[in-house]
Image (cartoon, rainbow, N blue to C red):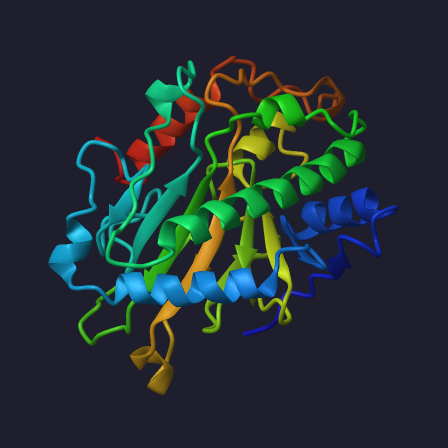
Length: 311
């Protein structure tokens, strides 16, 4: 398996030329890597430990936090629930979602339910509320660089993501048992949201599909974060910034007996944000491919049905 040659950019040292460099990386791979992102390593280490502690709980304990009818928006989603769009085998994973806490009386409350927290894991709520806020801040910085790259005001995305429907997902891929058939840890898919921020996992397996149709391994160096474009940003930019297909393949040999943990932060727009294609991304060679105006929540609900989280 070849390694994707994605440059590792610094959120501090490369600040002045970050828009150009991250834009080039996104246009080439749909992915970028960022170090010096400012999220404290002690916080990250604590989050990994609590993630392992939660998923080690008995199945019946975890399932008590599964909220029926909420499309996995908050709390626990059991093993083999989600399916990649167009796939037939459900993914070999279970996960927990932490969302944004809205102010009382928010008009967005209907699309963003309150969080729930597992009482069995001490420090879970405080740790992941803090980590959510840090991801949120870093994501806003990345979007600012993207805005400049697109010829927009650096703060163009700020009102679009204010009280956005972002989600921090704690993922557990259990050891892969014999008889999994054609199922893999995460089937080939594109993310729904604007951008995804991903802390590197200890176990390998993340791969992107290159423009040449080859699967390339994505392996961020220690302390770096992987950023990838989601379908919402692809739609907004008229496919100028591509949402790249990726997957998490099954391990082989003795590594099949190990769990894999991952913490992606799916940065979303406000639920009521209307999709209107950016004018600077429309040209004679690239006419508007998304003339219909829909809200971010309309788009999200449609996609949740496609991946089996909503019926």
